Length: 349
Image (tube, rainbow, N blue to C red):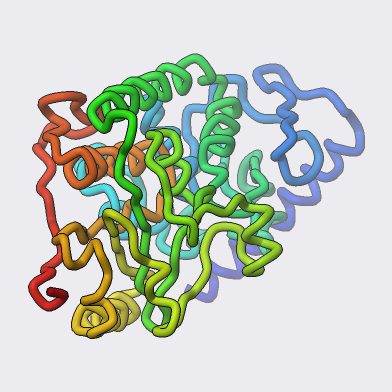
């Protein structure tokens, strides 16, 4: 293994030097390549294949974008995490190489990608190695509330703008049906995420918040903040923590909760926190709890692309409109019927 590591480093250094020389000698792209420029692109414009055939996806945004436009990547990161959010992709991703988390560069090199996609912050410390393996597009990522912009930008990388707009058209159509079902006075919905050590409220321009806004679903005043307002007030553009004393800020006509679970250990701790919350006498005083309108969302509520968005829309049909989405506006990405998973509210009155 040590010999393999030394060989990998040597190969990457040679490729990096070669690539740097070519970049200095010419500002034009080779035949079969095109220059990609974008406002979200990190770094200088990059020459990428005109028709990439072996794309490596190193983030969930590019993964969902690629699959949505029928462009299967040759390699991806953390397949188990992706499938825990979106189990409907299991057969689709069956032959995609799992590079682990973070991506194993030896495996990535062996996969022979002709294009690498990722977001800022994920692989900043190894960008030179990535670029030595294959042309690499890094898109600026600040938070998951920007998911639509990032999705469209990744589609532009592979020249699939029309295909992704067709995908978004279906998203809009489903939301239009949902808005009609909800009528002129839809219920107010609170989004509560349970962490191992905190209880957080997700705001209007968070990933799930943007979907609720597109559906015309109002938020409680405690969660009706823009990114700019939230960043200024809470030092976080999409969420903030509440205390036992401010637990009432989580109330609304309907509460949808989900838990943090980056690892099995953290997921277990978050579940314990949720159980403690449900047993809290203050929780029992909330209107949504007393009315039996507290529901459990899945891990897809954190995002990060169009597949997860449709899973959230399924939940909004089930929990907010109390309607079967398969009857009114089926999820285009799933064949199975979604199951409602209301929280056990008997502890809350």
